[in-house]
Amino acid sequence: MPLRFTLRQLEYLVAVGEAGSIAVAAERVNVSSPSISAAIAQLEQEFGLQLFIRRHAQGLTLTQGGRQFVAEARAVLAAAGRLSDLANSITGQVRGRVAVGCLVTFAQMVLPRVRRSFCDLHPDVEFQQFELDQAEIFAGLRAARLDVALTYELDIPPDLTFVPLLRLAPHAVLHERHPLAGRAFVTPADLAPLPMILLDLPFSTDYFLDLFRPTGQRPNVVERTRDLGVVRSMVANGFGYSIANIRPASAAAPDGTPLHFVKLVGPEPLALGLVLSEGALSALTIRAFVEHCRETVTEATLPGLVIGGG
Image 1 (cartoon, rainbow, N blue to C red):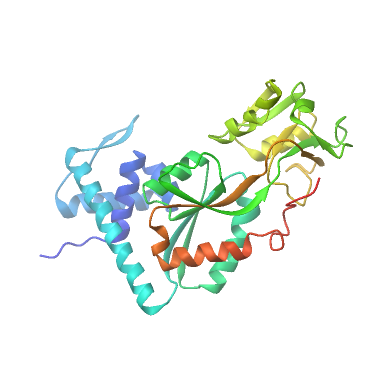
Image 2: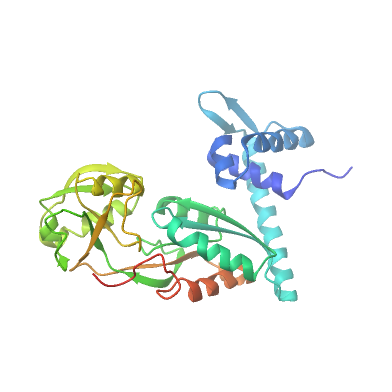
């Protein structure tokens, strides 16, 4: 009797196995929690095997058999992906699914525009996007939840490959009446004694703090938040300065209050680019996306950003 299950159900199984939570898995694969629950129940019924132990307070834990099934499901999904890549290579068509991550700090300013132009060129591609921090991007690539990600060149591990696209100089983000707002540039030493609103995300935090290391000073961090919009609104309302490499052309916080950007001299510009797992470029769809980003993630084609200048 043939088994009745789908690759999509196996994808959901792997997502839950890695997340230990239906809600988190649903967020990762962009479907509803009931769809995930139904897929897991159908797989357990089909195989006559309990794959998870349900604990109300602690989420889901894989059974011993469930761990084996998740490992095999990963292998099946990888084999299916290779078949799709082979078909694309034979036909020369860019199609199938591509899962693209983007660093949350600039996703809203870069990813939708890149996605729109890529999908217009390749309408047979099923595009999935995920806004993540740097640690989540690395984990997603290693677990094959992501095919490629747009991010900064921040502590890229040796098992992943970085493809640079742009170099972005850091800027001090100030409210319009800040004493330093009228300067052509500032230095880390100028900023160190002043109250700082820190964007507190994995890898990003260390980058911002390391900008002050050559001065022998530590910045005066008075607030930390993981939300870039909150950072900008706090700065715009006079609670401190911040630092950003992405400089939007619209110099206003989410609450509409004006912001002022002043170039930060001393630190080297930070590369924005693509990070991929080893062997990812063997897939035609991923190669097509990388080449598309080379053409579209440029100073000339991202009008919502100010790439250079003070």
